[in-house]
Amino acid sequence: MGLGPDLNERLARARADLRMGVPVGLRGAAGNVLVASAETVGAARLRALMALGPLDLALTGRRAATLKARPYDGDVARVVVPEDARLSWVQELADPADDLANPMKGPLKTRREGSAALHRLALDLCKGARLLPAALVVPVAEGFAEAAGLGVIDADAAAPLLAALPELGHVVSARVPLRATETARLHVWRPADGSDEHYAIEVGRPDRAAPVLARLHSACFTGDLLGSLKCDCGPQLNAALMQMGQEGAGVLLYLQQEGRGIGLANKMRAYALQDQGFDTVEANHRLGFEDDERDFRLGAQILRKMGFAAVRLMTNNPAKVRMMETSGVQVAERVPLKVGETEFNARYLAVKAAKSGHLL
Ligand SMILES: Nc1nc2c(ncn2[C@@H]2O[C@H](COP(=O)(O)OP(=O)(O)OP(=O)(O)O)[C@@H](O)[C@H]2O)c(=O)[nH]1
Ligand SMILES: [Zn+2]
Image (tube, rainbow, N blue to C red; front, top):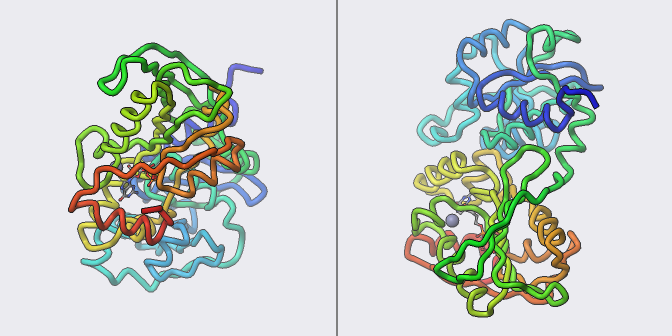
């Protein structure tokens, strides 16, 4: 292997570029394009992209439905960017913050001919970068991106890599006595694709031959750290650790999947939409996301690597139970975790029960 970056490393760089507003080249069977995040692209780069040829704004089918734009490619819509479009036009299509105040955004023309494969990959990269799922896409000649000094991704090889689960490596572990239990050890797990590290808190020395009391906790900055009353995450985190402490054994995975996998900035956008009257699921859809963008296979991989084949899973979410089972970790028992209901999160919990099948 040479010293240059492999595809995984190029993808990690591409996500960083998109976050900085720098375009990225994609090349594949569907052609050669430059893509940029609609959220972070600046006015000067937008003008430069428009000068290259017919520009598309790729949106997810979810966002397109809110905007009444026809997604001819199912989960992706390719909106034609008018020649006189300004940056504010692009930003307002990407970001639903002003949808209610400014509902007349159309009519939007969407592209039907050609392939949407590169647009779909661009949206995956935006999601992976925890940006709004909205990407500018413009065709370019072969070699153009390289000559411009931009990062280039082999799209046909990247799509299956992005769908696969990154391999996680154990970095370090050390004892961290907690209020809930003095016998805790924290393990750091690092994904090979350069994405965020995940943590496992092992309580006591659980018997690997029996189902372990386990919790897959998704990071929630507002609930876990600030004591937000809008969700039940903080009390669930504490209650799970307390129960593990009382039983003397358990494992809590702290997965960096803030906002059900959309990142804190997008979760705060979802909260702002909830202030406008939308529920937690509707808010995700208006932003262009699915209800839940988390990949629970991650948790299963960490458990297996730690030597656990079966769990007593602390959750009210049946999807977590299903994903564990299909990822090769047997769920011997579901242990309900009902704590922390407040007047502010009662509706949130009711919506999760009604729309996401959570058990009350
Ligand atoms: N997008 C979005 N994420 C939210 C919202 N409220 C809380 N979250 C996130 O949802 C996740 C909470 O997940 P979990 O505690 O695993 O909850 P769950 O999937 O309902 O499952 P259990 O708690 O195991 O029953 C955290 O990542 C929070 O940041 C919201 O309104 N919108
Ligand atoms: Zn929360």
